[in-house]
View 1 (cartoon, rainbow, N blue to C red):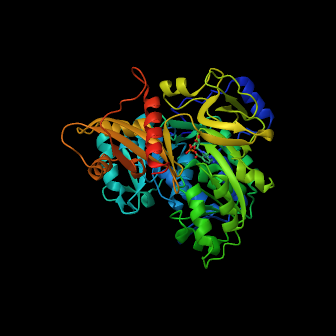
View 2 (view 1 turned 180 degrees about the vertical axis):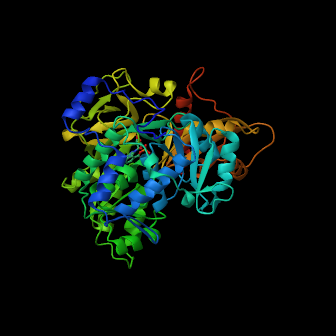
View 3 (view 1 turned 90 degrees about the vertical axis):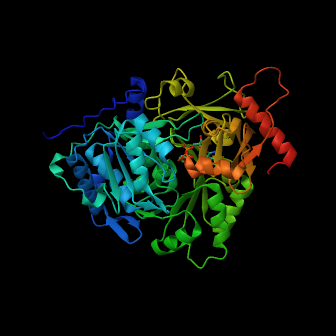
Length: 550
Ligand code: OOB
């Protein structure tokens, strides 16, 4: 049987009320475009232009489309059905982009894991998404992902298929996929879910974020305009490509939409990126603050020609004004601050904003239809210019998480605003200054870590009686994690506890940077206090004792 339409096992995401759907369509935000639709069109229009550069691989738009067709048809030939979810964990390779485009062509729904994720996270994503397949690489940065695939199938047998880019061992090699392209389905409903992105996870485990074709394409099409991406642009992916920032702000999808060139760097440091900037004449790249500072420093003594770089975007974590100035001085290009979230809302400083504004704020929303509210603890608007919680809804901000009623009740207001968890101040013109997080997570150089998730891991150790995890200011990372631990039974040492955490199979960036053993959590408060207050007290006392940053 030829699957003529997408048999999406995910319900169509009819979560925006009709009135808003009509408004976003009338405004021209949602144009009924789809991933396969625009990729096909670009392949026809810019067939021989180079779309993707990674290592020695250079794929033209026609080749990317062809490769995506091979992968998509091959996956359907294995028995996967349009609408099924596929966990993707690949590094910054041409194979990553071809695979994702292949999944779109087959109507399969990618779930993006980061290369750093390990069995604990992968099993959670696979279960939550009810994934049927896992696509990964043989060895990435010394880590064998085939072992991870075995562990994943043992824990989540519903993951029926494993595909490997490279030496596949007992699994199916991505390169070997072949299928009948006539079996590829027609283009999907633009309102259907195109993929599931991973949330930073401020409470407990990461949530899955359903993004539709219409909403996501709007976000990077509009980003292209704001960031000056056109057919002549060369966009460098230096951060992990699976992250929302280098994917869509404007990211590699924005670049492909514009018919521009995407260059993938195997790593984010100057050693890997600078030669690529010089060779490929990169014009735009997005980084987290610590890397931007590293680049600015390295540029002073670099022998590579970085003069093609017009815009350096910095986001994912707060770039303080002094650091912003150093980035501008060091790299001599236009700085663009980006404050975004995988759930939707993205703010940019504009390329023609005065420099004093660029260094002092995190930008303003993409769209005139992004609704922003800054409220107090009771959801009441704060006075103009006061700091409050940021709530938002709009044409590319989700209205609910995938399959997570508890998180939805916490994270969305009755009228569909997303509670970002960020505390912001709104300046005239709608510019936002991020003042921190209300919730308990650690933003470690852009990697978000949930205190609760790490405490749960620590509590699984027989020698841990109680644990509280907090963020500590860090000159380089912005924030680092510190775990306060009360021991029980035989004494444990910090290195052993860290090694044990790593052994549990979780992303290395989640292992606490620092462990402080304490006798008790006795607080001055009367009676039982919330974990949140406890963390705040421990953090405050620690910072007082250590003078701020140790
Ligand atoms: C980006 O996305 P996520 O989902 O990894 O993290 C979102 C959170 C925000 O809620 C905020 O707490 C923090 O990351 N954040 C920033 C920031 N950009 C993100 N905090 C302060 N200043 C900034 N410039 O991180 C993301 C997604 C798309 C584009 C850029 C970043």
